[in-house]
Image (cartoon, rainbow, N blue to C red):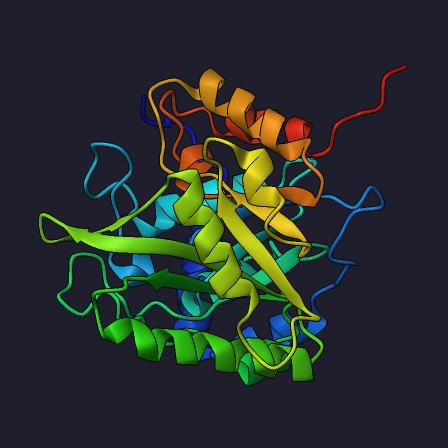
Length: 303
């Protein structure tokens, strides 16, 4: 069901366009003036909404192939989500983060810079996942709070070697800068010409071992992991703080929430990073979807 009401006015977007054209220096000023906060809540939890998909040419949500193509709609959904209590921050590429900064939506939020977007969806070079977004110096320059990388390991595609090396360099650079960095690892393979992540427990566990060993220090490394069967075994594979990947939208949100709730209770799990599932819910009710996820992350103690 499409949304019929907008959170942001047309005037806000007109102002955004005008600043982009006439005063581009305002981006750096907005980021420099942004109020920051600790990464983790007092309870040690974190709920991030993600919007770095378009930069990799991935615009589909469910069966809607161009759902994320309307940038105004995406920004409207993101600012609405960020306005909700319990939403700690946002993950995005520089274009998204800069827009949100100019819209004044990032004060008091954890901001995560997405780094490697060069493995375009459907490309023959998809596993050559170049760092075409943020780098660590830029994340430090813009006073962001976290870095994020994607690590898809295909044992039969030689492009994986360069991607591994680039991720290792990013982890090392983040450690030097004392900047948290979340690595999102998968064992992956070509299936019918498409890059396909392997989501069985053993494959996820193997990917965790590879990812946690990257770089010359693991002091600032976090994991960003899919919720799969036998998550207890998966979480036994690492001592690193872990955020759960929301995954693709399903036809049964309640079943998805129940799966997240169970996984969030495991030792080492610190929260959720979710994008399309919540920003584009099947019924169009962004507030309800985001609030439900927030309640799972920031569980209120029993009276």
